[in-house]
Length: 97
Image (tube, rainbow, N blue to C red; front, side):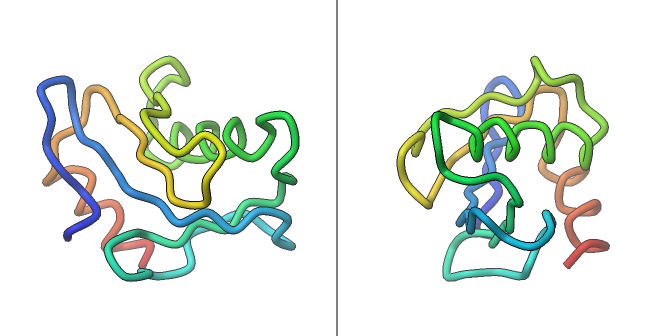
């Protein structure tokens, strides 16, 4: 899974975000990213916060363990998931995709 990378603090995940979707959820793989549809609009950080909340819920992590590393104003975003291994993240994502 080229969109997951192990880091010193956990796992980084590369997302291709589609805001203003009718519902939030994973929608497959897009090039080297996972496509994530988010209901929130891309206004004043609402979509970034919705991504953070979605990832925290999906991976059963506290909100403070999910951090946006890059892409705050772009469709392609990289999040850090603290407290997970690549294998754990890949297992959960395989079931969802």
